Length: 204
Length: 146
Image (tube, rainbow over all chains, first blue to last red):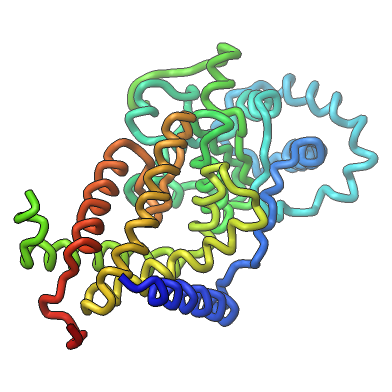
């Protein structure tokens, strides 16, 4: 075995790799941009978006089961923040936003669609009540259901907890597919169960 | 045992299998560097400053080593490179499994979560690589020397 040859092969691979990446329009930056799952800032944005959400009722999914009263109350409580957020109301999401359990539950009560990005087996074992299963690693056929959703609909993706990435990957995929309001529920299934929020088992 | 591993047909098949696996793995990652960068990030073992350097170079190393293996060029050297990569991959997957991470392995793009099966596959390929490093494989090789 010739160590020199090994070094040559590695060296050429590195050169080709960088050259290709430089020329490739889909190339990546040399230093990875930190994923901004920054909650302090994002939470403020989330508040804005929920305001937008409540102020424009026609983008609401029709089948919402929350009562008007609840909605009003929440709206009132949020109005205090509106002075600052009004300017940003029309600002669309530039990427999926991360949310934590409290915000997730708030959205859940509003009847927002939750998407379980885990594998079907885990979904069957237990999932957030009413959530749809679109396993990120799964078959394309799971994604067919997306065609029936409006692109303006609010979607929340989740997976098992904070250590999993499926929700983030799926969230980004949905966002790239044109869904404008995608939230990634960062605590996921673990946080949800911990709080004893509604769950269901089986395929539905 | 030694007889099996030094059998020229065994070595030839091992060479071709590893070559195709790594050509595929490399090409897949080259086509989608973003996902691969994300996959490395998900292991939560590397500082974000160096992740993309790996994401840019490792797929090409896999692809080139795979192609050279396929044509039987510098078989020992390329097997050593791939073997080293495999050892690194195995270690990373074991660490992640012990830490209980529920992530994609980033081996062949989407659809391959980490698990003991992945370790098994990698170990098998590692054995092939070690055999190739030890005994070389000159069958249907482009190199005329030796």
